[in-house]
Amino acid sequence: METYRIPETNLAGLHEQIAKLNKRATKLKVTPVRLVVDHWETVEGTYTGPFGDTIPYTARYCHLSIVGTTPKLQGWTFTAVIQPTEAGNLVKLVPGTVENVPHWFYEAKMTCDHCKMDRQRNEVFVLHHEGGGWAQVGRTCIQDFLGGVSPERLLNEASYLMDSGSLMREAEDEGWGRGSGGWVEPTEPTEVYVSTCAAFARFEGFVSKAQSQLPGGGDPTSARAWMWLNPSKHDRDEIAWLKANGFAVEERDITLAGKAIAWAQALTNVETNNFLSNLKVSASRTIVDGKSIGLMAALVGAYMREVEREELRRKERETMKPSAYVGEVGQRLTLPQLTITNVRTFDSDYGVRTMVKLIDPDGNQFTWWTGYAPDWVEQGEVVTIKATVKKFEEYRGIKGTVITRAAIV
Ligand SMILES: [Zn+2]
Image (cartoon, rainbow, N blue to C red):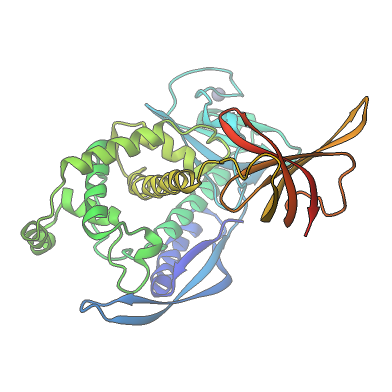
């Protein structure tokens, strides 16, 4: 069951909106949805105030799920709608039905399993049978597919749950409820929109939906970028302030956006991850519209986190000193804090041989050949030993010291 994380401040508004939606339920002969509280979460922390002072805060979030009627008929549950775009399929799940749909639906053609006709369709429905089967069916075939039973209630229930689901998603956003009236379906070229998100992320820090919910968190980056590209007259002062303070979409933002889009387009093995899959499809489109405006702002954050992780991995590789030879051949040494990294036993004509690989805190590698290994030899153990240097050898460009007559100290 999908749960939503709603900031306490949005809770009253959400109940109001759900009540409005539920009025429609009666007309559609659909059971109204209920919000069920799973648990409360309290976040305590500090943020930096306008004068550099540290201000403590407590934020509360309610984790909720939607309970409605599962859209089910003749054993078939309505689980998702597939919308083709020029760049691939967007898969919109029906809340409360399944965790995800099988991966092949992400690449499915808009065919119908009932009439077998492959024609231009704006959407197909994914149905899941309680016996385990899956089917994709076009709108006009649903009734026949279900053995003549009118699918009206089924479709109503599914679209009703999806509306509730997107309402919940929106209510997770701190900026929700502010100036959302008169919303016009936006379309922007993908590069322009993502570049603007990147510019705001650079100028004032990336603010995700979750972060925007914290006191002092400000509006999410998606809302800032949208305002910049489509300012209303209420935004005039804000735009003027931004310009006066040197905000602009710069060359480096456009470069970052290009890299982020390319990164998302090249994501692989995303079939099992609904978010990454929709991210990839949205990034592959030439325009951003209402279907993908939130996803494409999230792209900037996701890409920046990826760059950060890659940077960490690079640093880790760099600070790891290369392995060097230790001591001199024939020398008896005390070697402190060696980690046993590998133990392998071989049967040979001369009896059992054990190879023990060790590494010291400076990254120097050791190999020790022995017969039956003593008790203290165990992979992962850290030991201090005495050993004699037998020889030095280089394997695949890595220098190693071969030791003999090792004994634990
Ligand atoms: Zn059909």
